[in-house]
Image (cartoon, rainbow, N blue to C red):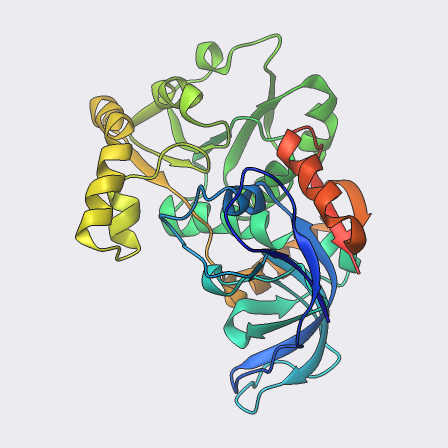
Length: 332
């Protein structure tokens, strides 16, 4: 089979398309014939070595973190899936490899694809949807009728986070450019702020939860709109000591992450709020919950462009520029 591989960390985007063996599955795994794979900023971070402290890899490494496809074979201990099932997954961090014609994946990491989505659309869902689900359920422990603010919620993340938050009974506020207003309101947002006309920090206060998608430069303003004991989860700012402790990292790594996140932690302490950093985990049962929401609400992910697998490097370059409006997908 063909696989897009890297042989070392590099600032250059230059994956090789290599012929490799089709993976042999373990008893708790399924073999998936990959139909489409999502291309993400995370792939760029892996290429340039930015996430080595969180997950270091051996080479050659087949890249790619999320996929959709058809099950070709099942291990003898697999109970919930059959050959022919249409499935999708966010691959476990230590077993990535979506940019290949086949992938071996643990049963616990996969879910049945939403019936209202094509393979291309389904490949755009797992990473963003699980990030939203885990931020809301596992970190914020979000409660109904509370106020959630998602700055920059008009992209691919907001397209998943807003319906999931609404399914939990939250009042959802987001910001972005005017062209995103109608779509954002149509998928359930209660309030939209055009960031070119209004500064959210001037119009919002007493917010219960913030999911930060913008990074360090906005953290102070985001904390300023939270009520005391409010909670902020960041996708983009610094990981901290708590993040390292949650992952059972060794003490030296905890201290290092503690140092990296110290400025944000002290800011959170000053505002009397809780700060957490999220790095999404593979979880098939949570993804099955996402499937139910996507089907019930007929959610369609936002897709920017679709490339053929032969053009994987072009797709990665597109993502690296930061100019894509929604997900970039490669198909096989």
